[in-house]
Length: 115
Image (cartoon, helix red, strand yellow):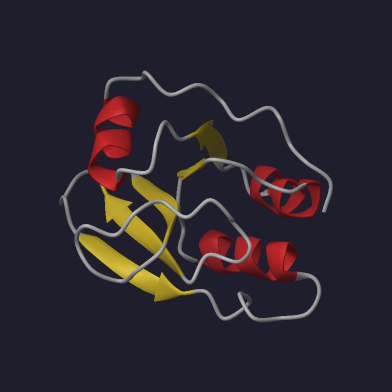
């Protein structure tokens, strides 16, 4: 399974970013190989439509789940249409959220905001 998380940096120890569409990077974690790689969010500096473009970046990575503290309705529509499960992060520690997801202890993100 591949999991995407919006993060503040492209190194181990990076924190979960509170803004999905404006996150500088996305961590892509493979639960089988335990490998991580980082994808630059080219949409982060766009004046409009960042959420939709950012969602397509994640979809293109072939992920199965997205862990995020919040998500706009436009990005959520793209993510959900691709069949990607969306979960709400708890705090800003990446490793902790991956652990909680592995233990099925993260709640689905169902509070989608406008945008």
